[in-house]
Image (cartoon, rainbow, N blue to C red):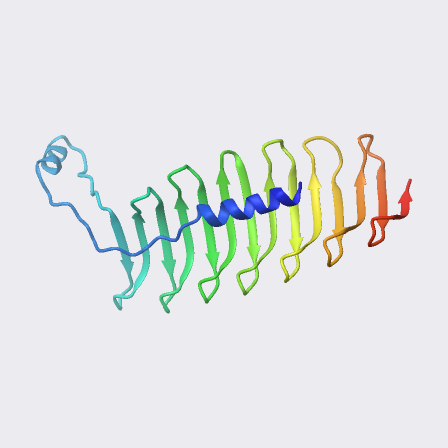
Length: 202
């Protein structure tokens, strides 16, 4: 997996996820359609553009609605009106689940689109710190970033063959690699800050 793949995952997740917004109740009036359904022995359908869930005190704890651009979203709030969880399906067919902290910042995002699942973890400041994904070619990978948003470790596995672990320094230069070649033999490589090999085995 490359750095471009990681950025693509982050971009797709953040761009594809839009929080649901609260709206007024919009119940349609009962009419001939509901009466005909009752006569036919079918339960009448309730059609609304949005729903608000309230607790015994009248505080909104959840909202369900469809935005003008086709985003169907469910948002759940805590007692302080802070969004803590969001589930949505975009107009393009991507499904996204987001979990938020007490400040409403995303702590984790899970997304599936076009057969490509992605998972992202954020710190308390909302910075992307770790993520995992499966690419269309079957390759899977996991990346770890430091507080400065720099990649420090990659763990990847191709569709066929052995896994590979790469470690990077603070300048995002690859300094160590541990993996397996096509025959299953382990390979270890260490380099200095200039990329010169310090150790290699076998």
